[in-house]
Image (cartoon, rainbow, N blue to C red; front, side):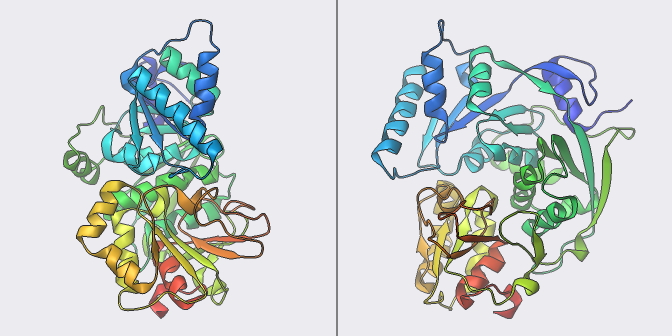
Length: 415
């Protein structure tokens, strides 16, 4: 019986010739990422161990990104604990470099790897053909100490992409459409595998956007087939694949979907669930108080270019706060070189340092009672971006920027 990409990566990590869905295997991890959301808890638990040790410090990457700069004395204490521990133990440590998943993709992730991240959107690494999955700090601690963990081999849902996206439609619209189709529970503890001839038309930024949001359908991980787009990205960042896996022709899938990219339209996810989707036209006219362009889902240079092209020569609505937050230092620097940040600032946007910002909802750009945010962030449940009685809409960089100009939700082709 053939194997899916997820099964092949787990088999490699488990030292097995083959595995199948439903098996439980002990695996050796390739990388382990942690950020400031829970690293301080990991440190406390580590220090409480009778014989604390780190199995392989070269596999650890710690990143400060959620609350940066610090927003309180409590946060400062957590950061200090994380920073001191990383320095004392020789852990790769990033602070001020950007959102954890963007930093990992730029510097560390390679095809074929099995990666644990102490953050739910670790599935973003599937854009490079790696099995990334989010874990809690207890599982992370075990992996850090032993270098291993156990994995229940997930079933896989296959998505065959066909055709090409229309002008003004983006990968963000693709994944929101898929989540709306299969529901927020439609891929619970399953791998979402993407391939088909249409995949070649989606750039790496778009692939990251798709894989990143798969956890919002409940997925354990997401995986794109490795192709020239993948290999070109790796080469540009000075890396080679760990291993390249393609699904077998007789691989077993729990479900198979054929997605016509040409039929995708601009989408909005309405409050308070990511699968509560509708066309942008259906949500048109909804007044907004804040707009956010950034996050590990849509803060890349390609997203900033889209937003800058739309807003150039125009102004942010006087009734809207428009926060633009590049996903990493390298994205920020490139956006400066291309003049994109000047375009946003001239339009009245607020350009922030690379960090999770509004998507995290615990520091920058918190919205108040009754306020409405349109965001390229990852989630829109109650209280995600501030007050419990606020409202978050999710959309593409184009729709968010257009809405910031109009002061209400609107499609970019109407600006």
